[in-house]
Image 1 (spheres, rainbow, N blue to C red):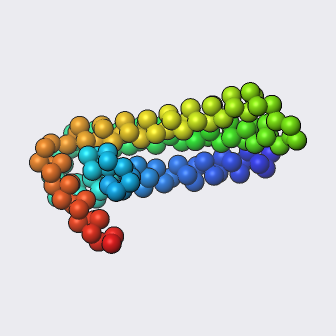
Image 2: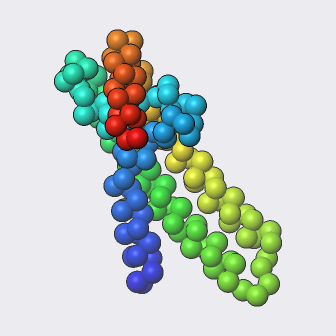
Length: 146
């Protein structure tokens, strides 16, 4: 009973960091320069002149993604635990272990897809001018990090 509870808490703890982990650094991923970190958008909402409808669209997309990702993280924790159990024996059933690993990797893929979907929805909610301003803000933020 204690182990699944710890896995659940771990998944929830990981889920609370969803907004921080959405957008990779520009040097790490070519898509990063084209998409916008939800925190950056919300932090500068007033400066960007976000309209109420835009704000609602973005917040709704974030909440939906957070819920979906949390569900996927919980499922992934369970599948990972099953994979660990499959690997504990001296002789591992290769087909079963690989099938279990495929389940884990499928959930990871779905999480990444959900994150990308969120970033696309945020970008699509913004005007060209807002996107241009965010590009400038990203450059400033990257310079401050260095």
